[in-house]
Length: 91
Image (cartoon, rainbow, N blue to C red):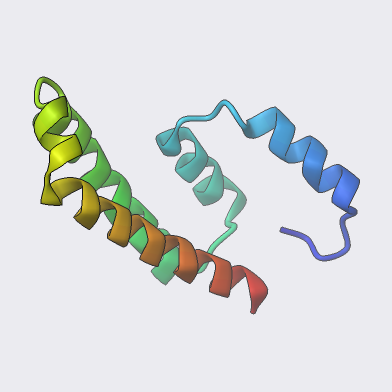
């Protein structure tokens, strides 16, 4: 966000937004133009994959998800995306 803002204001902002779903948070990022187009595109693709995974694979198959490769792949992808986002914020 704005580098001129204080930590207190940032904490207040996060507190107000902590109940957002991933989709709501990504829509807010679009509205506020928080990320570059390439990062925003990655977020949109991740949300689409996440929604498909949750609604078509995990629902009803929770035991398989927790025991299998799907969980590891999802964790790896989300970690990589998180790292990209952190790097884009630092720049």
